[in-house]
Length: 318
Length: 262
Image (cartoon, rainbow over all chains, first blue to last red):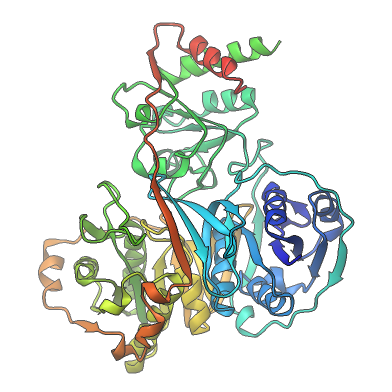
């Protein structure tokens, strides 16, 4: 079977959930080979084996982490040249899409970004993307070179398929051009203790209606074991960090349940959450466009409604 | 200092955006405008130019209507414009777009080196966010992307990049390519004076041949991907909306529990 390269998305060996999703998708297309770039492999090996990586290519060149994007793209390009894979799968996100972009140019290969589904087809993988804030669903195939696909989180349910991967050290030659943009400082984001926004099964977001007080939103999120999101209005006002912004210029989420509290539902916000399976909103304004999207909505004060709902959900669980 | 800002003319996100039978963004039947996310790049270029005695050249690729994006940038204060316009370009994918932009930046550099290429973080229509990285790759420029803060100092540029898991400081020597996020600044509105002045600013229109790019490697027929089915997503079924009369939270909890969502 032809190999399918999966770039492992990790921080010092802590593998993000998207990687197990990508390995699951890769098994539909061929034999998954994980590409592990950077340090911390020992911590990652278990997850890669659990989700069916038949092979792991290890690129441990320390300079890869010191420079932005370009070295990872060079390493992958060298592997694409030597392995001739059926496809390369990379997790969506600023960094993943940029690695994919450079890889596409380097290998003269077609690129599809932010796929929400990938299935095998007669002429290679068939991707599905969501366009114009979720108004359209578009399928595509890659007609030139090696299919390079970035896949959004939650696009597949990870399925274990234990293997004993063969691991292979790969030495890459980095060009001077790849060493041009140096990361001179890196401050890890403080851990909130909550699930990561793009990976969470439930997201509770707050907007202008919170008036800067996210306590009710956070309490409800913690009751549900959810991640916390924020609208652009809330982020622009300085009420919540940009890393939590849901929308066109923030994160796109597609959870099982999305709760919008005090968010009117502008197109830019909808672009980031419209593909959520179930949508619930609480807003004072009965005319807010968010209510056009919801499965269930409450017109009312978010502080009292969320507090009451938190208590009731907690009780229902007892 | 010479700064090139790449901008895109896009369909207005507030209007009904549609896809043509060829699987392309419909750019004709809809109102267009300078992509909102590119305004941040124009603003940043102007701010840098003001401090470093620079010249800002705005560059776009697109059909005739795309001239409006150049005009708007000139009204904001850019000094000159370049519009790459050619029928052969219709339906170009991201790799072809980056090829054309890179060729145009090279040509702009023929009368004075380009020190900085600035772009937005993504377009608001295709929204792939990959063209900046591709242009950097093609030009061999350092890629310093998704900047929430930019400092140009002597021969180098330093940015703050707010990544998924960390905040990074990234530094590169000039010339470099920088893309900026919507967190970076507050774009200015064109003043009346700016609008009048823009009318006299030079705008060049270049064809693919002017750039020495083979028309066979751009456009829809040269795309490296092929669109299959385009399906309008059915509008979400109108759900149940209740007025809170003291039990709104209970009813919300009831909905979540009965649908096994919690």
